Length: 433
RNA sequence: CGGGGUGUAGCGCAGCCUGGCUAGCGCGCCUGGUUUGGGUCCAGGAGGUCGGGGGUUCGAAUCCCUCCACCCCGACCA
Image 1: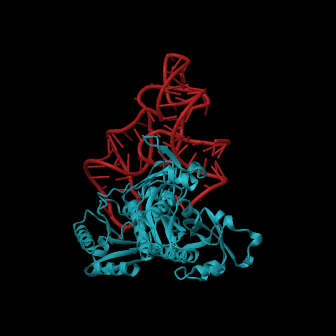
Image 2: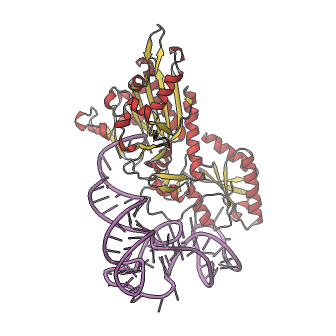
Image 3: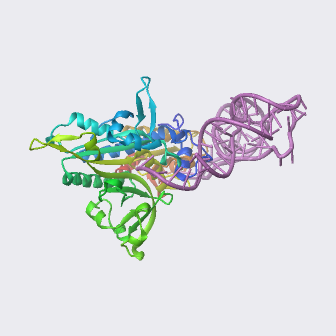
């Protein structure tokens, strides 16, 4: 994509409505525009990030044996009356009537619909377990939306649901999802820590929140220092259960088993939440199969959420500097930012054009700044956008037959001969994969 | 919903208290020139129902009433 024709409306100054850095940077880098309180239009750059995150999630969910479906954003009130949540859910649920005066709602979550779907279509224990997920927009009419996409009213969420024959099997599924979540966050390039969550009326110990550590996080987390010695990629549910890690609402200092000198505290942004539901919904909405003995068996359910649009903000909170965003490779809207430092120079333009063509031909995604601007402005914009690698083509390096590679995160620069620039860039990108 | 605040050009703001002629400034945008390895400089230009409605007045961005929107603090959440 050439920057001269790309729709990336960047702002030099920070809009006053944005209070936290991720919101400011998302507006400044042209990822989103606000439509109303808690509602956003996703511009090309922001949408690419959303899609990249979604695709990482798909890859890992599919690998874990979950199958993607897509449910309607609109739901009939009926199902919620069956589950009993139509009354209890409260004003967060956006309710309305269609032309036939039927009561409808915009889905804030999908347990009712998915459980009813299971009820209609799955009849035998032989089909179990079933794990389904979708990536779909939700609407929760929050009392106070804030912090940009971190707490929007409309938000993109990956919600997964599992159906198992009994508690033991459901627990295994939960465990699979637990490790899948750790893999997802690692693949996204962020460090998310699992903490025990409030299981509410269901009880039990099978519910975890996943938090990205960031100073601007909404929740305070308290955890055993021993957690820091564990590679999240190898963390198991059993380990997580044995070590202390709580979000603030669950942390009661008097009851905390960790000695003060080993108790760490950081702030976190909740980006995922997994639950075991037992038969809460499967009873009411009849997610029941015929068992081996011919008798009906009520399935044990679990639900697994990830805030996809919130992740965009959370990743920026965890990964930025004074100059702008620093995208982890897996979610970056483009892999490479190619900058022609002197568009009025025929040689620079020729080299940059050719590099753009050859990189693109290899399937590398490139944002090519072909505009005739001041060097400072171009570099500042590219830093703001935060693509992992910058390829700079300018007169100085070209005199030596070289182009310059800059790592956005470390700021490290290296010069490579023009003759093997494409190969070198390809090599760098592979290292990161 | 309770408390606090803000709406003036794409963005950031001044003007309002103490009403007065074509409503200003910076950035951005357009044109011409200049400059060219970290947001250059100069000149010219386009762009505004001053959030909406009502009122007071000879006259309203400014005063009064009312409605709306957005932001911040609190309870709630992916």
